[in-house]
Length: 232
Image (cartoon, rainbow, N blue to C red; front, side, top):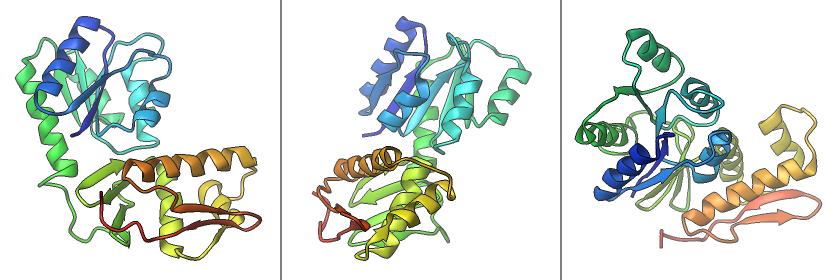
């Protein structure tokens, strides 16, 4: 099941999109707070985003740019703006496709499935792709994805960097200083910010059924202990 985030301020249209998405076995999640789109994206970590252009506070182009700072997941614009300049602007801001309103729902579903196959499925480019693997857990840094068995989750850029550092050095302890250098290039970061990022990685691992593997070694740093075995 894939998670599709719907950023559309027309409640009726958003509800219909959600209904069609779930009819095909995926999960549709409708955004309610249009001033916190990026925060909701990072909390949900959807596999694909449907994004309207005309939104309260900030337009879809703005949110597309913000999402692109942390993720490469597919973004499809849905908009009543049908002009070529609007479509070009969407693509230049990081969109993967653009659908004009009014549209046939079957077309939207077909384009969603096409993007999902391209990024996560049969058409996903894997030739020569760099991976980091530990005990069946596979990180795809270029895609910002983490897999165990038949389950795959999307990551943010910082989660990807942190996991790559921990996976590549397991079972050795990774010092706090090393992590800070990898994530923030020696910029001053307080302990709480680092703890938040560690907890986010723990949450991502838990989504794959891995509990307690990321250990805090007091006074030294962090260690990723293997031994979780195949996906449950």
